[in-house]
Length: 285
Image 1 (cartoon, rainbow, N blue to C red):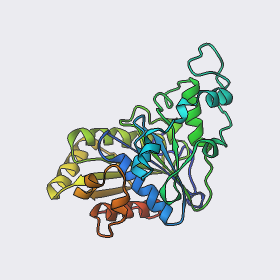
Image 2: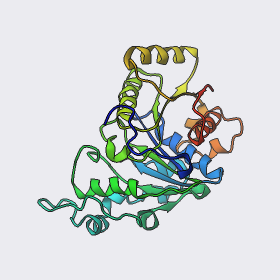
Image 3: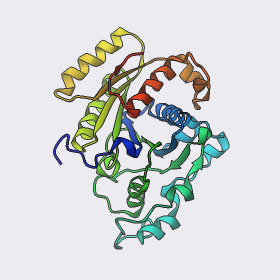
């Protein structure tokens, strides 16, 4: 597939499909939860998908601690995986059904979170984009593709750290990718790799989100490093999310941030929500 070629172009009136990726520890999960809650408050039906093995999205969304800590991810539902793929997890030498019907996955395993957000905890997706035919990864990849969207609906996907998992199985059908970094050398390096991959996979709109920005020096550092290491890589949107002490104080849930009308973090996240709802631009805190 040529760079910039759309794998599955997503018309605007078919809802929002957004994937967030980047280096571990840059704030992807908090941003995912805040975006999911905001989009739901705008009246959208939102499905938040946790494809990070750490499974922290439930707590970030504001689900009760006990419920969040005892979620069983889809990858651990062995009977369901066997039912859909025709192969038990761990079984070798058997033919995996590559296009299982997973239209019931949200109804069977989706959990209700605050503001009416539905959460689907996937578990790991390692290898799903690289040709692995194991039943677990086939089920996880197909589950993401199986969720059909109608106008006014959104799916927001939080991925695990890095870019190794971020292949065609994830990208297919997504209209937006937010590449999240912080103003650090390692974060920017992963963002450059993820941005190039998102372009190569044909995701129509690719956005760079720089989180925890403290001052102009941070902005200059990111701009210089992106120019040096990014080459001809271009993003549809550059968004700066300011450092906000309230984010750490609120951890793990975003509820206190949503309740603060003056939160610098939430002001930036509202701008991000507007981006995926329509207009690419540069957003400054």
